[in-house]
Length: 112
Image 1: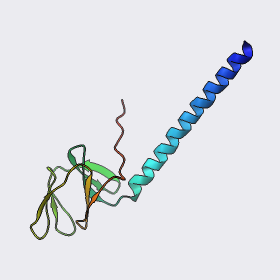
Image 2: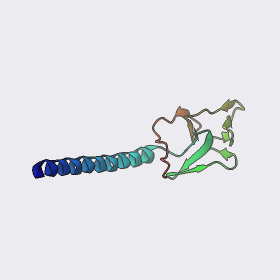
Image 3: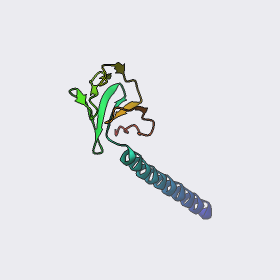
């Protein structure tokens, strides 16, 4: 009976160790994803956010990009030629005004 409890404790410890190591590996890969992304404006969780120098902050006033594109809080964008577009969930626009899909950005985890 003692050997069964010893094996049970060893197995539980091994599983817990693997679980903790996998969480550490995921956290490291998440940091790499964000560092690869250039500064941009993105629509995430229904809000316009700006990624600048690795900091993701909500847009409080219209942002004018390097190419002259104006990005508003509600997701509407006015391009330099006057064309109006609306960003949807998952869209991002870099400082040159290129619209793309931001599938690389991990959603922030809510800590409870």
